Amino acid sequence: MRLINFFGILAGLFFFSNFSVGQVFPRTDTLFIFQAEEPPTLNGSGDDSCWEKASWKSIDQVWMPFNNEPAHLGQESGLELWEDADDFSGRFKVVWSPVYDLIYFLVEITDDVYTDGYVYNENPTLGGGYPNFDIVEVFIDEDRSGGLHVFDGSGSTGSSWGTNAENAFSYHLAADAPEEGKVQNLFHALDIAGVNWGYPNQKVANYASHFPEFAMKKEGNTYVWEFSLIVHDDSYTPSDPVASEANLYDGKIIGLSMAYCDNDHPDENPLSRDHFFGSVEVPLSAYNEHWKQADWYGVAKLKVSPGTAAHVEEIDQQMTINTHISNDLLRLNIHSAHSGKVSFRVMTLTGKEVFTSNGFKRPGEWTQEINIQGWGKGIYLVDIKAGNDRNVRKIVVQ
Image (cartoon, rainbow, N blue to C red; front, side, top):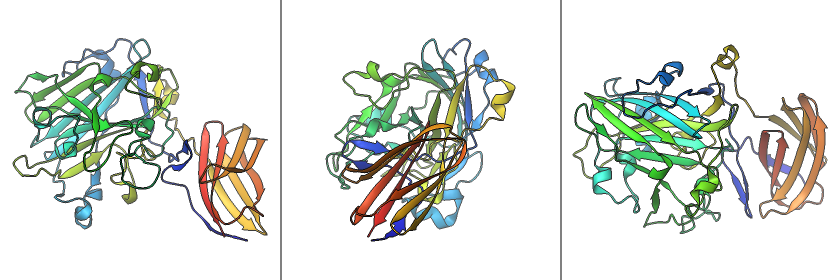
């Protein structure tokens, strides 16, 4: 028996029984979210003092067509190349309050053609089509665990889609444009929900209640969005949403990205988005993955105040693993800044444990050897945890 294939870092979750794990990717572009001494008044003006201490972060990554290249126009029907900043430009700020356990967003969008009408025409419980309107998206993973948040467990597109939809949230904020200089407070926050998202009758939820305050103001081609967000963890259930409300505190790390769907042709039928912009860099393979999996979400850290160290600090919770197989012995060379307990589990895809071990390590390199003789042919998951670091690898034994 020998190991014939060892895959690299996984770009998603592996599911077995009711247990799931994800693989978030290292980032050095941490967004620091500073505490607001006094929460903003959300009226679409963005003139509260708390915003002065927050830095703008751009929504400037062209996810579709990827890197704004003609070769990638076929990713989705109707895509066009982004023209310039007048066609679209976007940026945002974020602050938080430990008193109200809310995160506050200020989003500034410049869009020469604003395609709306979803809120007016569509029933949000029926789903369908909302990415084809001009919408702001908020992707948030409360514990930065990564992994899929749309999966049916069987690999099919059946009625069980969405069984882990709350592992992360991909809120699609749809709002009709107000009159010039006016404010719009009506909106929908759409996302896949619960355990009943199936084809062809797609089921989505309107999570507007997760956003206690919302305002969007129009000044020419500039739209200023201000809203607050209740952060929910992955235990969320619509029957008791309060139970999953997360406590916000200094040092808390979350997965967070922002995005914008842009459609410059409001009169076409059917509607089709022209571009998709994001706030974080992703590889070509993940150009449209945020809606269903959180591995490439940006990383954000809540801070009390902007100390000097905060601007140079980087968040990288990931361990690196090199592997070697010889004579039925699997050797894992692990590098992690963690010092302390390390746990290892190896399981089949059905959740049966074939190996467990615990150890202690100092920061830096550490080696674990595992005898794979007698395991039998098949796919196995190697789950390694060291403090807040976690890595899951898949091996195929033959």
